[in-house]
Length: 371
Image (cartoon, rainbow, N blue to C red):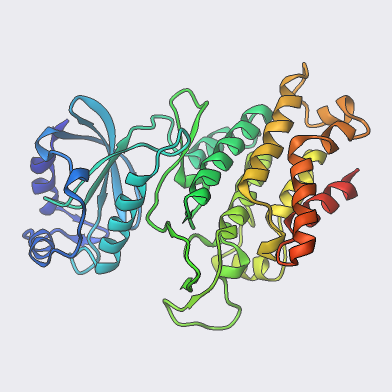
């Protein structure tokens, strides 16, 4: 471990793929312009922060293991761009992430510790020693995780998203590399709020997120200018969740081998991953979550209830075979009478009157078709 200031002073003299830290002008320029404004209560004491080994590196930031007041933490440092400055876009993203992450408190969302604007833009959170869900899945291929574990992870993700949507926050970049695991690989937590934002009735930036997990309404089949905005809502996160759930059940990458352009085209033209080897009772959940029309997708509250019910049935059985439900509930009546599906049926009745939502209709019809 080294002192944060000493570490960053050394790093400024080094070149990397994002450009040079130069003579520190990026830091000085940022400080004098006061571009980022963060509540003082959220700032850490930099003198009590020590930086250790590198954990991960991305196009916009690097993450190190460290200690803050003797507590293990993860330290995310925003990288300069090719001009050797931290761009206004990255500063805005940093401020938004700090602001939103500091507001949320949930067992399945990484815990915010604090932030620093000097000598660099740094975000400090709890340390998740299990790494990302993406790396975990890669490490176990070609085998699939235990079904109970996969559904447990899916339920944890759903509950985190249920909480965020309840307080009006859209994540917009839900994917395996933004989900972290505890060291024993039993608990999953959502991270990286750089693209998250509060939901409004106004238009938002299109193509925000990562193509492979991005909802079709965020694409445009016609050429568009960077930064073009359109209206969409929190249901974009439900679509992204469906891709993650599919990955957890198959340990495969959605649209594997296709370029970003081809993934965008496939999604926009209603192509979806194969349902082969997906447990029969989970098929309607996937079908409804990745529905073309956002109104046909369920809310995370419904998803959480549905998954919790399936997990209860699964844990009550001596086997974790994907065919468990066909053996335990051959007629499917127990699932049809579950609280989750009853909730969806009630929602459908209400939506039929209002004619502005149809998530239950899609969910239930898909389920009936699978019986």
